[in-house]
Length: 331
Image 1 (cartoon, rainbow, N blue to C red):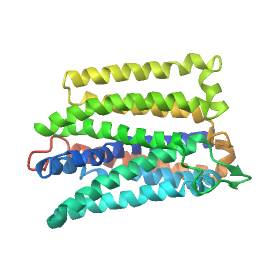
Image 2 (image 1 turned 180 degrees about the vertical axis):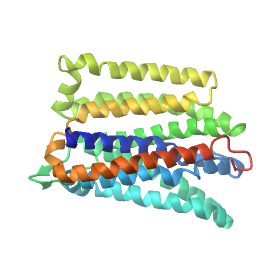
Image 3 (image 1 turned 90 degrees about the vertical axis):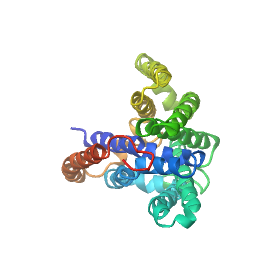
């Protein structure tokens, strides 16, 4: 068993689970200022209130797992990306506080609404910038970060930041289609269409730019016979996008959300094709950054116990709070 590769897939699963589960509630926050104050905002916030904090379990697992399984990569990535990562964490704190105080401090509801929306926007943008900065390459000097404070900031990282904001707004709008009805659901259908078009455009832009960031990226996508397999990814994206817009046209409630998740899954697959087997693209491979085998085995036992437990209580919480959020703002 190749333990470093296995742990890379475990961490990729944790990241994807976070994007899937926390992406839609960040998306609800991004759309929040466009909703009518009062009933619509209460419905939107209550649709994610029972599950939002559990969703962030996967973010903790991804960060902690990176530090434990690939300590060299963690030691290099963190100094390179301190600014966007700290911005993301502070934004998540603000939006987390807003969940509690909005109901208990109605005199300043507008402030907590903007904290929820602003925290969601900044967190999503910072996550996208972090991804873009990692893909464009990190300057490594020996076994340490060798770049400057602002190396993370580039046109490509800004593109990925904006793209993830739009993508999360897509997830948020399709979530609201599932969880609400009436005027708010009609508005969500409109946002799902506009955000869907923008997301497809962003996926195309990032996909076209990524192979030219590193020579290795280009070879993994276009070298023969790799292209026979990698060409299926844009084809599947096209099919998923067409099915998504057809589901909106038919005003289906569940399939838009599932197909939006499919677009994210295919994007994640494309990211994996570009990066694997590196953990820091073009600099350090998974095997070079991995912890000793004994440590990976020890952690694997814990992960084998805890991940099924996390999946079970996550599934149970979604089952308990299934169904629509009523006009009064409660399930």
